[in-house]
Length: 328
Ligand SMILES: Cc1ncc(COP(=O)(O)O)c(C=O)c1O
Image (tube, rainbow, N blue to C red; front, side, top):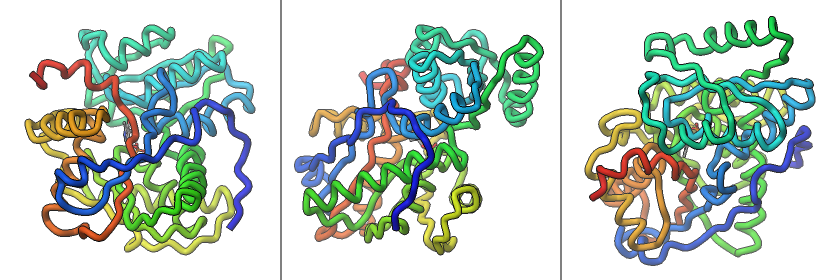
């Protein structure tokens, strides 16, 4: 089915390549593993968020906004990507971070500062009502004559998730032109928008692959609810009559480990293994956990030796630097 995408702006370097991970496939002793390098969408704007921001910032510019407000953890990739993309298109950014003022100025936080983002630090308790906090900050900016545009956590709403609907269109073309057979697509899930876009895209572009999300926080039932609601919003807003049922949403739970942003030795070892076997750098918060999940699911027999898997590398490299002491 053809879909007329709303206006977007070009931020990401596309299409991102698909590579075969021969050595890792041998190490995991299972299916052939391919990787889609969405960590290569750009330097400052590396990762999956940039695809979402192409639609979100287009809407902000169309609405004549001059500020973007968004939120996340202190090392939020999404907040950093938003700040860099905002600077690129001439918007100011205000990042509401779940942290203390004493969070070290490293990794994503450093890049955010570098591109001139403003910061509002709030406690984990305050963060539970972060949408209200962002609305309050927007009111303050309006009182000063600004026009703010609020982007929810992870850029995961109907507009942002279009980024991965469009990525699925790109993927469908690549799979066809490379003559690949992909049985499963595996991706990290943090706020659900990437997965929602991919799943809607699977139905829209007739991708035979099953889409599996590995959650890196919360749990399966939380994400099935969140993704169902995102899919509903997207279908309503863009008048997409595609029949998707809850059973089509595959969330593989069990790899949150010590919790959001916290690393276990197994996750660190997985990141090292992939780096040394393939020269591919995963991140500690999302793709490291997802890759550990994938290897464990191969070991448990969910994915078979005669199948082909595409792992989507969603970026996050700056999250490695604040954790360097855990590696050696
Ligand atoms: C590097 C990375 N991978 C994966 C994700 C998960 O994407 P989503 O929030 O769309 O579920 C995020 C953001 O949350 C991320 O920063």
